Amino acid sequence: MHQKLPEHAHACPLFAEWKLTDATREFKTTLGLPETNPVTQFPLPDALTDAISTQRTDIRYLPLTISGWHRTRRGCRFVFGITVTASYPPLTAVSEESIHLPVTQPRGYLTTLQKMHRHGMPLTRSESLIGNILATIFDRKKHQKNHRCRPLLLTTDATRIALPGKDTYDLPLGRRLSPEEARSEEILRQSHTAYRIARGYECTAPSPTKAPQTFLTADLHLGHHHAIRYYCRPFLPDDTDTMDTVLIMNWNHTISLRDTVIFAGDLTYKADGDTTEAYRSRLNGTITWIEGNHDTCLEGTCPSHTIHADGREFLIIHNPKHVPDTYHGWVIHGHTNNARLERYPFISFTHKTVNISTDVTGYQPIPLSEILALITAGEAAGRTAPILIREMPAKTDIPR
Image 1 (cartoon, rainbow, N blue to C red):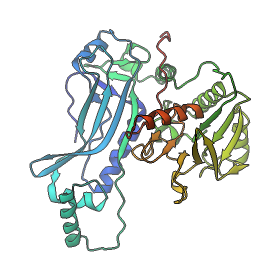
Image 2: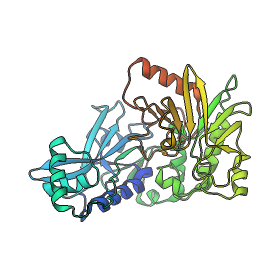
Image 3: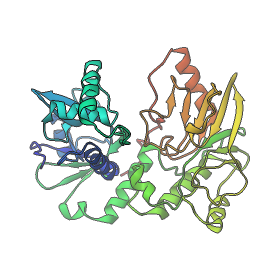
Image 4: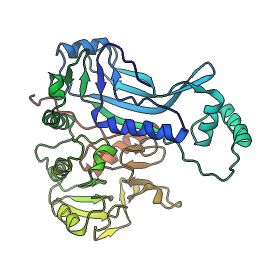
């Protein structure tokens, strides 16, 4: 099944291509669908297409929120798809737009309900009733374990635009690319660097604090090449050298020797003792090490840490599922990275959780004071909607 795309520009979220393809594959396998169509680009409004084609814009990336698996009904059939919500610059008529893109062929109503019920997908009350009836009739293996269909919620950015014809426009570099240039690994490396700096994901100079502060972070996964694909990190696939350099530089540009750091686990991915110690020796600050599930050779760790600030208690732990049932305060955690934002966003005001995985906090440690300010403002406003990721100040004065 091939997706037919309109004859206008399409945004390409390069960092999320593997994740979107793998998530669609998992969705297909879990529901037993015959075929799916992974969506790795989406159409742009005509105004933005024209502005980019004529190089009348200085935007360096397009923020995207991608969610699934949404279904639409066509007669007696269902079609599953993803919804892409894009934030556009002021030159377009709309500041935000959501587009629904199908990833499956139409499927029979009852067959689809049965599979959705079996794999724990959201259903209306009447659909759940029908699903229970179908399960009673057709699911003979009462004790079979069915995999739950994991939801899809992802925040990423598009950095390249596929223009009508064969050319590509690179947003961070601000220029058209020929087909040959678009395939160049070196040009792509330059584009990723320009993007990280513009997005605030790569610190180019130290930013010392006036007084010692407490910072928090987690899940650096240094040396772990799969982390680049799994968590949509803005680096070339398998380029762990650049990833390690940027993450350590961000740490040391943010944290001075007099600052305190609470690290909530997963410095590496099961690295040996010498490698782990070599990484640790390069990091500034007085660090409290909380053990992560991949810290097999990290010494001097503790299972959790508790702090009190602004009249609140915070339990800091690696895996939020390991929080005791009797605990009802705020939880600061790592472990989930940006892979479960629907349940573990940057800040959840309803569940009282703060996700400090580096993929959620802009690839650099976050000061405790910033977390406290966001919680205080959210609670004062009666906010219930989560903050999916930490917003970093964009840099617009960088020459191309």
